[in-house]
Image 1 (cartoon, rainbow, N blue to C red):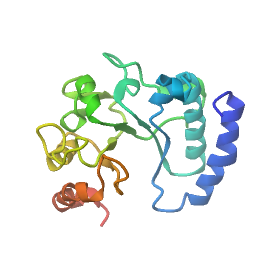
Image 2 (cartoon, rainbow, N blue to C red; image 1 turned 135 degrees about the vertical axis):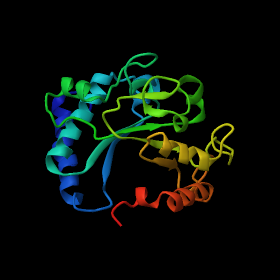
Image 3 (cartoon, rainbow, N blue to C red; image 1 turned 90 degrees about the vertical axis):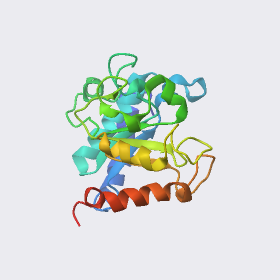
Length: 223
């Protein structure tokens, strides 16, 4: 599927477009994540070590197809900010408007928001996003392009894996609240059903309930 423009276009035209046509009026489909952690497709031998130019070419063509046929938002859940930011210790934003539109010359080839992931192993390299602003330089900022909204698109429901204490020296409540106060648009824990050691709904509900009670007008602005 990643081999050529023609195969990427075939996927976009024969799967993506019919999918969004079918579900674009469903209020629960507010966005599409085109790929979960493509970082490993590039870095991992077991995942193919596929060049970013081929990976992101598919993203560009799928994003354009979604934007041209619906109002659904588009993102890519990046494993860590290494390939989601420019400058410093980063390798360049492989899903930026500039990068996507260089591969596919279409103004609709863009993401609507950033969705970076965070697990404890990332901290020593890039800091902890809850206590950083999405954009700006480290350590105060996470390094993302500030032109788009950003959310923490995957984080253990336990906070630190195997612990209910949130990230180191913090709690889930302070993690979630500081993410909001620092300008993140949301936190999406993995998982709701506790399929692995990262926790589940019972672990995160105190923090999400706290956020709902304190910031309801932000969470449900149209009520």
